Length: 369
Image 1 (cartoon, rainbow, N blue to C red):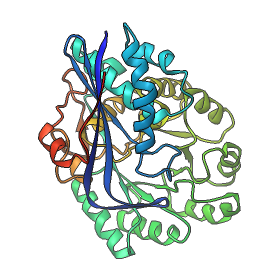
Image 2 (cartoon, rainbow, N blue to C red):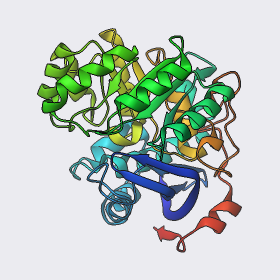
Image 3 (cartoon, rainbow, N blue to C red):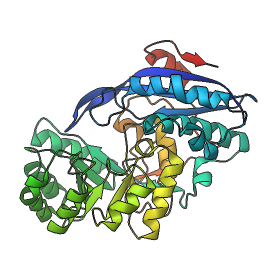
């Protein structure tokens, strides 16, 4: 298909509550959307997951916008015929910038699937009609406020609780939440690279809480350090930021640095690479789960479809819309018995609400031809 035009939209979406990790606190999302229109008039939408600042990743929203405007979009527009499958070869001249590339890929794939009448789930290989959902709980102002928040999510039916931790906020809050939940509820922690090898003895104390996993305790480049940690503690080590491709996932697994993998499409360059990572892990009996990046309903729809693949055996961070937003950018995703349904309509299966886009826009759309 031929892409006739691309537009970039910037929105400021308020979060229902501040979300704090070891990287900092967010009160709103600076959202970048990629909108493509084919020569036949078919539309596609993609969401960029980069943060406002380069603190979680080297990529950030304004940087992604610049790369798309000046490099990725011109390459896509110049192509006489392009598909999601050929996009990687077309964009390979740009080194890295996986979040920017993932947003473009999502928009192209959405248009492609809408034109052919296929859903994301069917195209990616979904094996289920609905997926189990977990929820990510940020660092709270106090233990009491943390327990109140977790209690609310348990009442809503979430099937797994994930706690953000950092030095000084780990053993006590995790112990308090485990006591609240009892032994029967899945509980895991996410360190977002906040620890070092010097903390191994401290991290071993988390073994007492029967955690499903500890996610990304060390910096992303330190795969060797994670292998040392995995051999030293009983809690399974899960890699998140370290996993940037199927090749890296294979290497980390072979080195015993991880026994569980968090797949984030935006972090690895898109949904096609996410499927390749899934396949690598499935072949090695390594469970995977779908991470979240505070996506709107647009990104959430595609993530839910991905999470329905057979290797995604653990609940992901595919929470209901109201976990983050009072109003979502699409029709809201609602939790039913701890699960979300996989959209079945063409493409992502959801419709972007242009009225809310106009309300939340921080500048006029940038039109590229």
